[in-house]
Length: 115
Image (cartoon, rainbow, N blue to C red):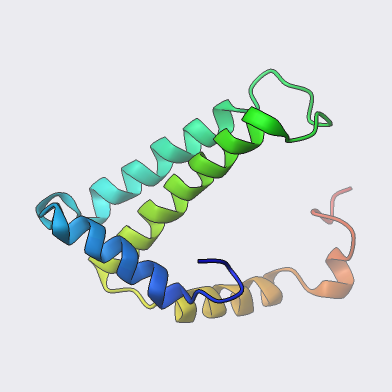
């Protein structure tokens, strides 16, 4: 599997099958999955705590980053499955909303208008 030849739907099905094979659907509700996303995101952040932001990702640190990032995405996919959310549609809608909120010409190369 690679990003070049794997669809979001295929990843969702992979997560759904993993959950189903273990009969974990009873535990997978939006609240608990949102908590799990936050917990895994905290583990991802912990990799950078007290480190220089310019330090490159490599070796063991890159391996850990990859695993924690995968955990976050897996729980996001499981949450979408549990809530019946079409992620492709939700992401497209959110990007459109963000484009209105952050017009390209005003925010080009900046994250805030207060800089």
